[in-house]
Image 1 (cartoon, rainbow, N blue to C red):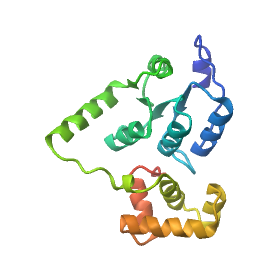
Image 2: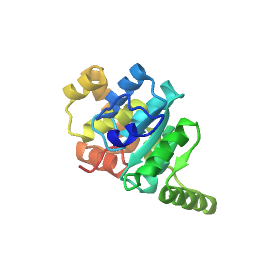
Image 3: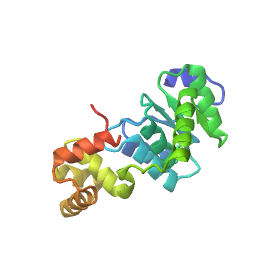
Image 4: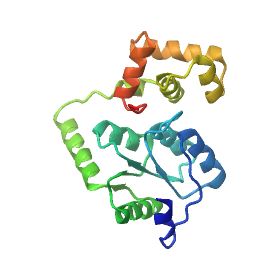
Length: 200
């Protein structure tokens, strides 16, 4: 993808990251115009990284490039602040068009994604739709939940998140209480179902 983009006039790839936490750090240092973000990443998924990026650096446009076409991923990504959403099956011309559109502070959705959004909108018009339970969790709680679901222990989570083990345990208890779940297995299943962590 990097080689493809660097052939395009006016596009320069300034950095690459393999997880959401690193993506945020690079954005702070490099201040790119556009970030092409995957959803399924370790430590911090792309939706959570997008949410933090939009809050901290709203001038940076996020274009989600994902294999996930399910409605919940699209809705969560756009609600988190993404300006565009493309499927990985897209052709190179569409990726470039998406990047240029987002760089111009406009929204870009691939046709299949736009179709999902319209269907979701029509469904909401016809009935009251309950938002996913993930919305009851704070940004930090979503981060901790993803790390729990990835099999990290309290000490590892504390190190990655930069907090104490006691704080991790407090968050874990709050998450369980809010979601009415009482085991790591239940939390993991919930995180996968809500798209907070990938199946693999």
